[in-house]
Structure formats: C-alpha cells, structure tokens
Image (cartoon, rainbow, N blue to C red; front, side):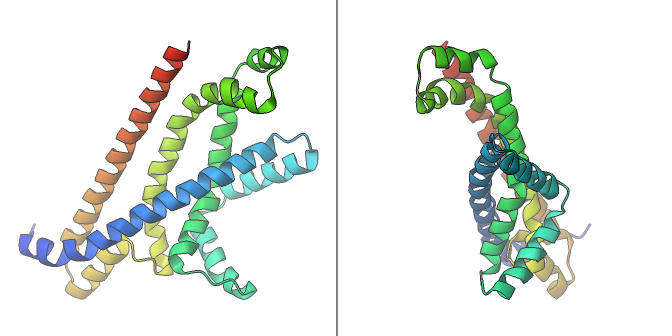
Length: 223
C-alpha cells in the first residue's frame, strides 16, 4: 500500500478536520433535539387521551420504519415548498433530531416502566405533589436504566452524519470524497475519516460509562 505521509498532513488533515467540527456540531445539536422531542413523544404515548396516545404511537412506529435518508430528503426538498428555507446544516440537524426521537421515546418509556408501581403508590400515600414525585422518586430511578440506551443512540448519531453529504453538509466523509475525486487517492482520506470516527465513538462510549457510573454511585448513596 502506497501511503504518503506528506499528502496526509499537507492535504488530507487540513481539509478533513473542519469537517470533524461540523460532524460533532450536527451530532450534539441533533441529539439535544432528540432528547426534547423524545420526551414529548414519551409523555404523549403515556397520555390518558387515546387520540394523543395513538397518534404518538403511530408516529413512533412510522419513524422507526423510515430510512433516515428519506427523512433528510423529505425535509430538504419539502420545506422550501412551504416557504421555509433552512441551511443544509440545520436541515440535517432537524432531520436527525426528528428521526432519532422515536427510539429515544421508547427508551425513555422503558425506563419509566422499570420503576416499580409501588414507588408511585408510595409517593401518592406520602401526599407528594406531581413535581416532587417525578423529581425525588421517579426520575432518579428511571434515568439510570435509560443512560446506556441513549448513549448508544448518541454513538449511532455519529455514524449517521455521513448521510448529510447528500444535501451538501460539509462533514468529514464529504471532505474525503472531494479529496479523492480531485487527487484520485482514496486510501489516506478514507482511513483518516475512519480513525476520526473511531476516536469519536470511543470518546462517546467513555463519556457514557462515566455518566452511568456516576448515576450508580448517586443511587447507592441515596439508598
């Protein structure tokens, strides 16, 4: 394999590293949106209104069966038709946020279902307010089980960002593709992108483990 270090440091890295920041930005901004929308969907799914619960459930199932690329194209080409113009970057953030909100809602719902029913009854017996019940009883027990699932969703979001190159978001694989098309050298740019994605995934996994360990420690002291 003919690997050129001068080409890697002089051409590949200076053009791919700006895309690294774009990848990180898209991932974390879309993940914040995912958490917000996922919480809304989870609460709607648990609503006592059959209409709201049914609509939320159908939306979740629809998004879980829809490819992300279709969602990206749908928003990218549909929003201008209704006079909503967003930069490709923000279209990608919106598409990934909406797409990943469906599995996030199910992860959160699973975390709530893991809380024993007796905890709700005990809070009611103690005459806790709804806010105090959620803050002091339910959420401390529900957050721990959802951390690994949401963490895996964050790592998956990193891996989904290359799809945004189809709508001209200048992230890492897009930069690598441009370098390869101009220089006809594929090994260096693709390898560098793969290594950077690996570093991001490992760093995210480490962060998730630290958060999970912190939650376990807090629960242990709380007991």
